[in-house]
Image 1 (cartoon, protein in one colour):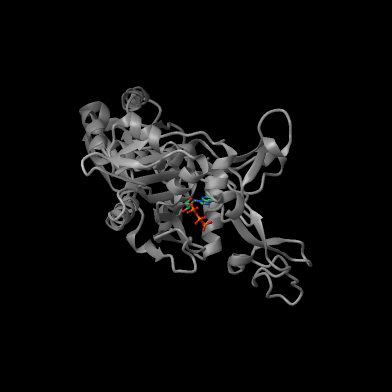
Image 2 (cartoon, rainbow, N blue to C red):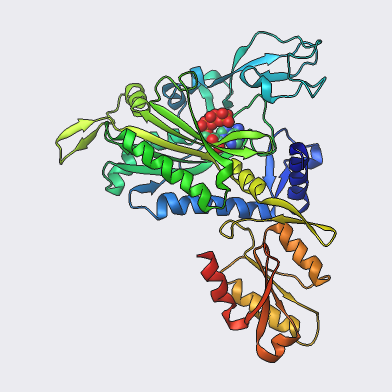
Length: 442
Ligand code: ATP
């Protein structure tokens, strides 16, 4: 399967099965903004829940936060976003399209898609100019400069400005972290590749506050933990790699930065950044706000501005990664079987329950099992169409197990379990179904 072909198939499956829809489609769609349908919202929620569980609930040293999207405009002056959150942009005078000057190699020339902008003889690119990616809006009824506020382009600043609130209210001591999941907005010049780069997206960010001098060690620890997490949610290890930021990519304040990259059909790209940010962020907020943000270590009787190790991932980008990683086509007896082989932890539906036929008491027994399971798990009931078609529908939704109630169930209270990946069937007692699922879901 060629790469564009695979993405086209995935995008069409996402629409057909209710994972992802183009925003405002009835009005022709809004550029690079997407909505999550019934299966997509569950999938993305599972990605976020797994992250929250690993980062907040399973640890004693990280606290959760949910800060507002709108923040004081001076936050973005202090952070450097007002002056420096820009991408270099070029226009083509011939075709009137706009491109990111530093990513021309990723974009097709609208005149000749096999070439990149600037490579076709009719291309006439302007000199690059800097374009600020923050969305601006106005607070209050008057649209004037003094009322400008920004839609946050990252969630991290909400963590920095709440660092002391969390510290004082939670009785944490350094080293400790603050994590949050929330929307971010960037007026990207060239969004694309479906939900990979969009203008509205969700981030899952964690800032870990450490004593200066211990940052290198924590940075390595977080690198290991984050790479491990992607494997825990089922990403193929051979499609994951590290990219270390060289001196030309590294922000001036950053002490080190590594990206976790995944091999998408359109190439290797970042899914998460892990950064050793030193004391840049708290230093800037201390300077701009005039408030002391130092930490007093009572044991050592010393005062310092903590260093920060950040882990920053995109929930939508990870959701796309999970979809790409799961998509496969198989030839089964001359027919193509499309499967989303999700890790059970992220699968939107964990199991389906089917009566083999709609008679002889099978629907009643099936509904009984379904109603019992749905109290604790997302499960699906389907009694329409041939059983083979029902299995195929669940394969496309990525449901790991299907339980079928048949004639024998009524005799000996056993059901068949059909495994999505192996397509094998075994019989287990109907009373053992719940334990079968909970054992496998962990
Ligand atoms: P890129 O180089 O791809 O623009 P970045 O280095 O600007 O990304 P960060 O600012 O480090 O990205 O953001 C952290 C994470 O947020 C990224 O790894 C990605 O998963 C996600 N992210 C950033 N921009 C977008 C976007 N426009 N759409 C979807 N996810 C995004």
